[in-house]
Structures are given as structure tokens and as C-alpha cells.
Length: 319
Image (cartoon, rainbow, N blue to C red; front, side, top):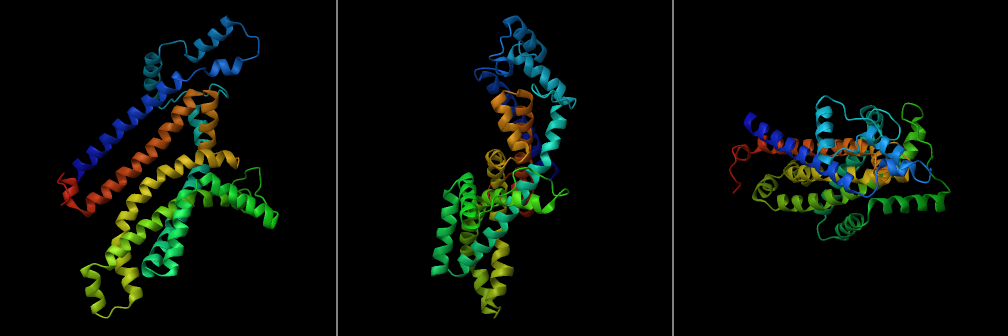
């Protein structure tokens, strides 16, 4: 198990390195840079602009910039923002709590509702309830999260003349205001995951309910409610666990647009603005966070699988 864990960690480290290099290089291939955007229409001479580029280290070849950045990153220094002059680490740490709150609540909402909808659909297979729930899941799976957010906002404004607060306040400052502002973003991000979990839960449940094991349990006179909740659902959670790991990437990607829409000061809005401003150190730091969180999640899921099935950690293919 130790060898398997080390192999997965090594693979994750390689992926992290490749993602970092790719983003570092691709951002510098985009036309324009931070200096050009800051000094446009200011009448600053070319010599002064070149001096500012030299100060930022943008006049060096890309591979030199990358080598310098990697050397500093190993020591925990991810650079400073080209615009605010703040340490990227400090700037990033101040934004993480908002994104973590949003992402965790969205995934929790999607997982709970998805399991409930999937179990009910499987238990009522072929009925009108099953058909309605499947249609419900497909609809939310097909609609982008920002469209869901706009529909909810519009509906609340038209029917109840209500809109969430504009200025963000943390849960420790004003919990009611925080809950009002974060509720719609959580719903918008969670509905897509809910639909995916519901569909997979239904198919996994139907497979479990049709197995010989479940037929034996039923033959012993166990109540149907216990059969579904204790036996069939437990066997269906492994597939759902994998899906939740993959849904993390969808949720993290969705925060970029949703945080911008609702003025949430999280890492999503930070990276959105940093890309527009060509604030390279901030973009790379945010990318490392998103990629690292996703890679760690996938590794944890792999390790859980390895604990369940020894053939995985031994490298043997499943039959």
C-alpha cells in the first residue's frame, strides 16, 4: 500500500509540474502584458515601460522567468501581484475561505439531493415519479450553472421582489446576509452535480436491486425499506464516490463565473481578474491551487479504491 501511495503521489507531482509550466508559458504567449495594460493611454515613454518590464522580470526569456519562478516557489515565494504589489500567497490566502465555503456547500448539496433523487427514482422504476425525476435530472445536467443562477435571480426578483445583498459579508460578521448572498451561488453550482449523482445513483441502485444478493435478502423477509437503504445503497456508493471526485473540477471551474456574477471575493473572481490584467503570478498561484486540490482528491479516491480492492494496488487489472 505504501508503494502504491508513493506512485500516485509521484504521478500527481508530475502532473502539477506540467500544469504549472503550461500555464506559465501560455499566459506569456497571450498578446499584451501587464505593463502594456497598466500604461496604455498614459503617454509613458517606451524607455519607462521597458524599465517597468525589467523590474517585473518580463524582459527575460520565458525559460529564464520560469526557472527563476520555480526556484522562488520551492522556497514558498510565489511572487507579488503586478497590480497591487501584495504577496501572492497573502492575497490568495485571503480569498480561499470564500471559495472553499462555496465549493464544499455546493458539493454537499449536490451529493445529498442527488442520492435522494436517485434512490427514489430507482425505487419507483417505470412510474411517473421515476420519469419526472429523470427529466428533472437531465434538465439540470443540460443547463449551465450560470444560467441556473440567472433564472433563480430573475424568478425571485419577479415573484418576490427580492435580490441578494451586493456587498459580501462573512458568516462571522452577519450570518443572515452571508446566507442570503451565498444561497443562490450554492444552488447554481450544486444542481449540475446533483443531476449527475442522481443519474449514476439510479443506475447503480437498479443494478444492485437486480443482483442475486438482494434477491436473497428479500427472500429472508427483510423489509423493502431496509433492503434499499442498508444493502442496495451501500453497494452503490463506490461509483458515486468516483463521480464526486470528478465533480470537484466542475464546481471549481464554475466558481470563476459564479463568484464574478455575485461579487464574491473568492479565488474564482481573483483568477478571472488576474487573467484580464495579465497578472501572471496570481494566475499561476490560482492554477496551482485548483490543480492541486483536484489531483489530491483523485489520489484520495484511488487510495480508497486500493483499500477496498487489493488487485488495484498490486497493479492487476480488474476482471
